[in-house]
Amino acid sequence: MKFMMMMHAPGRANADHQISSWSPDDITAHIAFMHRYNKDLVEQGEFVAAEGLASPGEARIVRAGSNGLPVVSDGPFPESKEFLAGYWIVDVDRVERAWELAAKASAAPGKGGQPLNMAIEVRQVMSAPRTEG
Image (cartoon, rainbow, N blue to C red; front, side, top):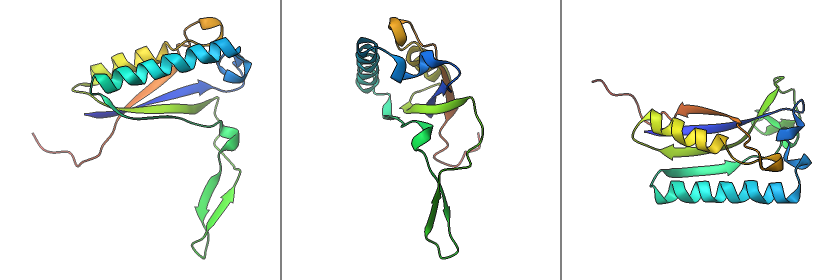
């Protein structure tokens, strides 16, 4: 069973989660944690994919224009107090294992080395039609 684990970061209201406010040592510790975490997933045979995402300020909205060409704008975006900061796709035998992995990712160190305890949304990847029975 594949699950997407989406790391939701609080918006500007909580600067402790904004990596731009962290010390270089805190950023290094956070990145080292993520490398170890991903390496463990690979070694356990559970890793499918993972990526960090740029800030929402760099995102664009794209629609097909009447001529089929992309029409790109910088909004409007839905108002949100959180944004998607990164994700993993894991392949595990049960949802409880995905929850365990999400909890571990949530504890990544942040500012001052304190665990972020960031919300991780876990959702099953529906890559094939459901089967009966």
